[in-house]
Structures are given as C-alpha cells and as structure tokens.
Image (cartoon, rainbow over all chains, first blue to last red):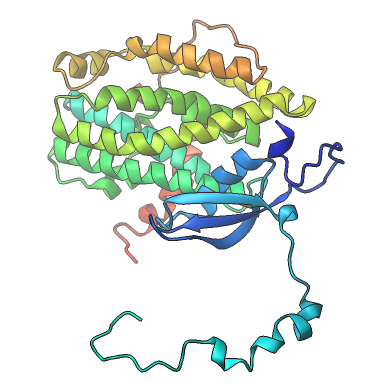
Length: 109
Length: 249
C-alpha cells in the first residue's frame, strides 16, 4: 500500500491501531448532481473503503459514483466559534435574494 | 425425470445452499461492514436460486414452484456441490470457499449465457453481473488474509487445504452434464478447469498461499450424494415450511 492510500498518512509510519480507520462516504445519486455526504464506515484502506461503501450505502440503487475520504483528512469548523463565525449572518436578510417579485410564468425558481 | 430439470436444479441449489451459509453470518461477521456485504451477497444468491428453481419447476411440469422445490425436497434430492454445504468455519474458511466457487461461477455463467435455451441464457446473463462482484469481493479478501498476519495466512492456507479436494467435482461431467451439453444448452464441465486453475493460481500467488495438490477423490453432491452437513442446513432452512406447509406472511 502506498502512503497516499493510508488514511491520514503522513509518511511518518503508522502506529498500531485497534480499530480500522474511519472513512467518510460521498455518493453521487445521478450524473450531473454533486456527491453528497451520506455516512461513514471503517476500512483498512481506500480500496476496501470503496468496496464497503458500495455494500453499505448503495444497496438500494442510490448512486452512480462513490467517493471516500479519510475522516482524519477533514478539518472542521469549531462549534465553539459559532457566535462569531455563524450568528452574524442571521440578521442580514439583504444578503438573500428575497426582495424580487417574480412573474407567475417563472417556474422552478 | 429430464436431464435439463436436474441440470437447472444444480445451479439453483448451489446458489441457495451457499446463500443460506452466508446468511448464517448475519450478526456474526467480524465487522459491521462485512456483515452487510455478506448479507448482500447472500441475498443475491437467494435471488438467483429463485430464478433457477422457478425455471426447474417449469421444466418439470408438475406444478412445483420455487418454494416447493426449496422447502420440500430432502437432502438426497438436492443437487449442489458438496463444497458449498460444509459448515462456515472461520471467516477465512468462508472467504476461501466463496473464492473457489466464485471463480468457477463466473466461468460457468459466462458459458451458460451462450446456451441455446433462452431461459437459461437469460438467468446466466443476469446472474453474471452479481457473480463478478462476488468474485471481486472474495478475491480481495483472499489476498488480504493471505498477505495479512501470520495467523490470517495460516488460517487461509488451512481453509484452502481442507477445501481443495471438493473442487474436483466442478469439472467432472456426469450423464446429466453430458446430455444437456449435447443439446447445446449446457457446457462442457471439464473445459472450465484450465481457466479456473489459471485464475485461482494467480490469485493464490498474489496472496502468498500455496496451491494444494489435486487428489483422486471426487465429491458427488451434484448427483445427490451429500455430506452429513447438508441435512442440518436444510433442517434449519426448511423447518417453518415443514411445520406449517404453505404458510405465508
């Protein structure tokens, strides 16, 4: 296995782990749409993660394409930052395009 | 009884018995993801068995449907390979069995897709797509087990050594095989041996597993002569229909 395939691989050698690394799974439901996050699973490497994602998340014909990403590679925003990070947007309604009158003929907007 | 009925039963029973064995892993597989994969593959096989057994019932012409054939035949009337009825053992045993069968199954379905019988060909084409995935799954695990730890290699090798003798049956044509092959509706069982051995040898080499020696022993499950294990499997699988015939829910 190449270093690139190891989740969170940094080239510094992997310490022994009890549990298989976690992977985030993204599925594209049909051509032209985005891949959407649909869950996570444990697998030893990327190849196996794809295979398991197929069995765990596409049993009911949900997707045409699968991405897996090592969970360790995801950097998340800090929920503790919410006050300065997210809340200021709540009262700025002028940032939403809600002040246009749309003609009735216009559909799918 | 027509040879073709017997012939079609074999494919149905192979799928059904292996599907039942895989279903036994439900809730017991080594990891959750494998639990789901096993269940998927089990359901694929049971789905294939339904098609084959429905066709067998039609060929027989006595009004027996898939359920009657699955639940109301005894051990000596089952036509699956002996290999498939052996108890699951550990996960290495289960994977090795699947791999040996999956490689054969893909070759078999490919051959059957050229059958002159349109029903047989149609079921083969549909099943082949599933079998290709099954083979990929078991082949991948075979290499992981063989190349994994000393313990996993040891277990995979032990499973291989124990099961190898049961694979001769795949390639030993009997009167039923010959009759259906002669009419252009089946295939020459022996003709699959070389390609099977080639594919299996390549995978074993990659998995650092040793090819066992062929023995003279040939199991006869497809002729209805089974090991003791099949009756226990059937007892569990059939108990509800035997206790309450034609029960539905």
